[in-house]
Length: 415
Image (cartoon, rainbow, N blue to C red; front, side):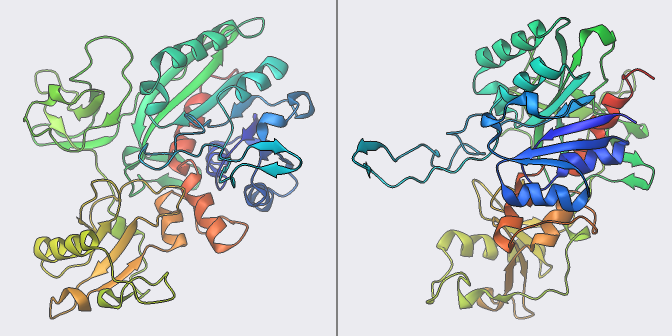
């Protein structure tokens, strides 16, 4: 049995995925005490290290066959790119005084920590993932990072890179099929394979699709806006306003693989309704925000979304997404990305018979619902308090994506 090591963030999603694929996790390291406790709770006896990964002497960690770890794109740029950067605001001005209070919160390791580990231990492969912006925000730095991997150690590492969306990935495990999770989550995934293995994994996603002409087939990615260079970007969920797919730069969609067909096709996906507990009741929208000590009405933008959902879905329950350009969506569609805020952007709205907006039942998705949206099984344990667990869920690698990547890696390892 091959071993894995995890320089992880979140709730042990990558560890769960590697276990699904048949790996034996040997260690986990993280700065977050709740994340470390989560790894220990799900893998009794595993070696853990609670410390900022940047400070760990990699010689003190066990050697493993495959290293897994997902670095942050840039510590001062939160996911999504729209929130305020987490820059350090506290400076030592002498005599024990500081200039400003600090709001710095470390989120995960940098991209150089896996290189430090590989330089010491030389694992057969390194597996990681991030948002597509890990490349698109600074292509020159990304290419420089790959050149370091190419030159590392006595053999060097060969990269295989792909873009996937968690709503499209399903995997077969000994326990059965893990279907796509009901969450649109665009990821850039990679596997760095030691060159002396003379093999690379096939990371081309081939989701189940139903072509109107050819029936059930396996879709293939099509990148209309990229003629040459790296094909890295997000899934094109809707056609651009121009009506021309080529207007969508750095985006892909799926087409039928049948020669002379190649129609655009949509992957078979799961709706968020499949993981919701509809027995959990909400509160009246008119009663305002429930996280305030005094009454505070929901914002006009939130109200507008609820009103729009009433018009669109005719009294059926729907999801309101309070983020970016969120829109009300039906329960038979996946939701948008569950973030480190633990899904605080997603609300379940259940219209009253009167269709009065103030009487609409409204609540945020629960932690267990978001965990299912990330592909965690019911027996997975999350350590820490409620707010900390929400962060673990949102920061985790989707279990299906981790399982898929680990399985692809396992197939090219020596027998």
